[in-house]
Image (tube, rainbow, N blue to C red; front, side):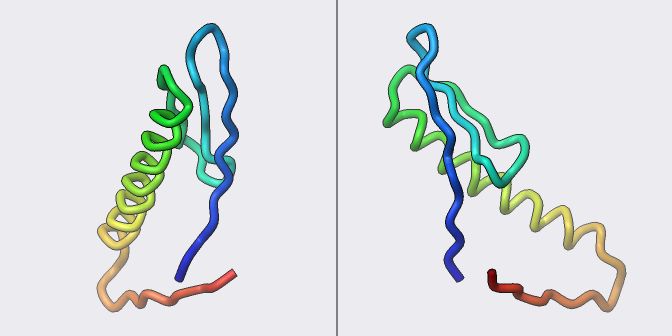
Length: 70
């Protein structure tokens, strides 16, 4: 399943700043736009994986994983 996310980016004082609108805490700062987009993608992937692992770790025995497609 493929999911689409929205990067909000802006340039400020020589830096590119950005965050992922749908996932709180995914925000980055880089010197170039391309570096920012790359770092945002890496950080988003890592955050999603961390959240997934944390959810499984916190689950009680007998849990189920159900895919919900939007």
